[in-house]
Image (cartoon, rainbow, N blue to C red; front, side, top):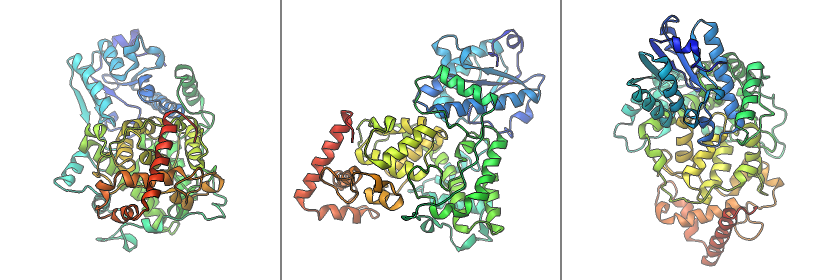
Length: 529
């Protein structure tokens, strides 16, 4: 691929230059149909800063690059001019940033108009707007029709509501888009089957589950992988197992594979975990959705059809649709509704550094070694591993919200800030003070014991809070309740948890405090737990 400032490029003065970002790769991109190949052009750029402003997993960077290159090649084949900037195009450190690269190329291209779909990260939007302004251009930002709702519509719904709860918003979208509805009533007689979707495998384990469909890298994808190794050698994570969908056809095949082979049992075991079993019944399509390789409406439509056809029960289908129509739209709405305030929130006054074990898995805690280990190997962990293992430990420990946010944003292949930031700072860390979740999602190691077999292989005892064999999760849980007693003791949804602390023997409570302090000290100093 050639840099966009060669002689041919300099001679081309587009009427409209469409910026296509790495998470806006839909073949139904709404601006594409309006472009005139004789007068308009696309601009795309690979810049190292998008992989280094937070340390990006190698597989995440390779996925974005591979999907972008596939998209660009198809647009060229369709007759459009694509100015594609590769890593090799950068002439100086300022061009290693998206805004700097655009600013440099605008001097050559000199378009009359500049437009982009709504970026999924406000930092990116500011960089592009500043680059355009320095060339006297206004960046036109178009609403992204990939999503089912808009930030403006979410804002109208939010209005003056005191609580912005997912369940209320989800029901609104179900009604508006006639999804899983029986007239005015919810299909199956209930809006939410979450209570039926919390099964654990028991001692027998998950049994044989069809492995998700993988996609052997072609020449374009292999080139992207090689370039990540060459240009970004210090990134975390591994690339050997890379087989993610990088085209719309791949994404559709992955969806169909999930619907056919794993959706029927997804509901029951969507929260379960098991040693050395990263995929279980999960769909593995979130990255394809977030890069816009897969239309969320298609995923909803096919899942609903599976219920109508008798292929999958309502509990599984509703649980899957809630993640897309409900949760995905909800967190995007929250991201734009609260804007840059997200980055400043630290309601629980958490300031611990992120432990080294999040980068090297050097720990005797089997649950963390498993969740972080598969994350570094694959760039993937499912939602309970993220919320109730890596996220829970960070919250109980008191990790500074920006530090754990940066880890999640960089380390998962499906991470884009609009979806990651509310999930981490709101749902996982309660750093937003309850704007998203009504209470902190905290538990002892007993939760992990119930939902997995991790504790069977661990030297720590989830039933113990003190002593050398005490599970760090359990110690830190009681310490968390103690430290935040004033804030939550009279909270209607948490008062019962905090009453246990009030009834605790003072001597035992002091032992827990001492043990928690020792854990924090050891982790700060880089010691192994």
